[in-house]
Image (cartoon, rainbow, N blue to C red):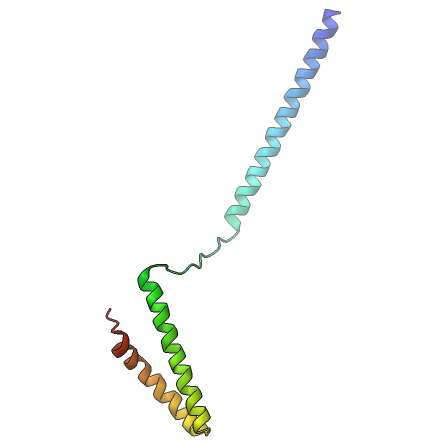
Length: 109
């Protein structure tokens, strides 16, 4: 009877050892697969804005400049309505925006 118990215990231990080995092999395969996928997939580019005081101020200034530019274009289009006047205002605005920005916001690099 004790030989039979010893034999069954040895079979259980052998089965447990096989299960543990199979589990370790499966986990190793999964780890290799994950590592390969990590190497092959491109990393996402972080698209985050600067959050400091200067960055917020520059965003606000840029918004004011863009709004002013669009407002000037709309006024010219509504008042004169001709294609030549709109084109002239566009060219003149594109040339004067850097000057106005420098004078108004004093951006020194």
